[in-house]
Image (cartoon, rainbow, N blue to C red):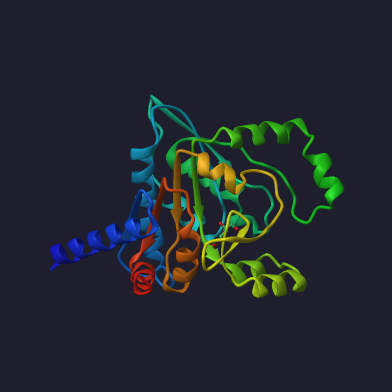
Length: 258
Ligand code: F6P
């Protein structure tokens, strides 16, 4: 029955949040590997979660990019009220994604769906270190970096290490190094092994992993059976305040290894 299914799902959510020692886990029925509707549901759930988490007053929500984030964003609903205001900013600049799934685009879509505002961080891909460093001195960039530092919430996804390295067209040397270090997961431009230890980091401006630890509200969104291993690896050392939004396919696979 539907009731039994709901109770079963509730049990799975509890087991997962206890296993990782995180605040909450929400599981959507289905498998986002091949069901787009699961991703739409992530949008509803993210909206409800932020509605619970974000206090009245001014909020700054830092967001990452990727296809999960982009599709989730498109299905969000209103969050802005007379008392609560939300500014969306990209969490990190230029980590190598196609335009439509860049953090800048995701934050713009989230702002328009929720009724909030957004600021972009313009850092082109593939910069020389010299240009990169001088760009950092730009007041317009400094301003957005300050906003990112002040964020009280971050929403991010989790990907498979080698898949993400290939998507970002990382060099052959980097690929070999990731394999040698048994990288299985990627989030925020950091690569993690199965124990959730950082094995490599793409040096970029914006939020660093140590900053995420201090942000009061952290929401991770990732599903699909193919991502289960990556999700488990990253979540092992995820900040304790994290809420994980995932799907049934990933959740069942994660619990198999417990
Ligand atoms: O590149 C941004 C990012 O959020 C990564 O940190 C993450 O691994 C990836 O996107 C997830 O992408 P997708 O949702 O397309 O699997």
